[in-house]
Length: 91
Image (cartoon, rainbow, N blue to C red; front, side, top):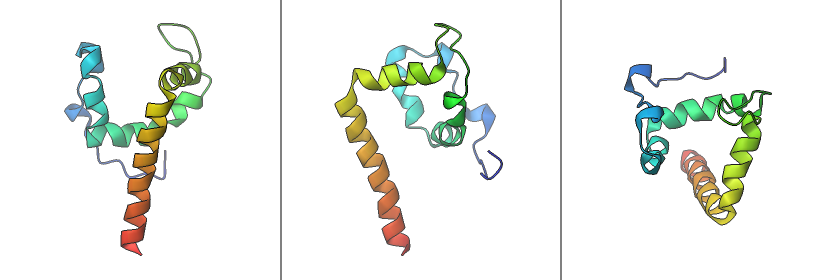
């Protein structure tokens, strides 16, 4: 957390609690939200529990990813591919 420069501005975030479930994917398309998720993923592996289910947050994340493993793999490949392309361009 201390090694990242986070440029996302808190007041620009949408409140996920007020969004329809079908619209939540929009959050992942927002650069500010993605930046905060990227630097905050450590919270998912911390021994914290979901407020709704009482299960560890990492277990909640795994359950979601296991619902559509092929889609997750495709999206992850595309995401990592973009990073690799940027590295190739910078070289």
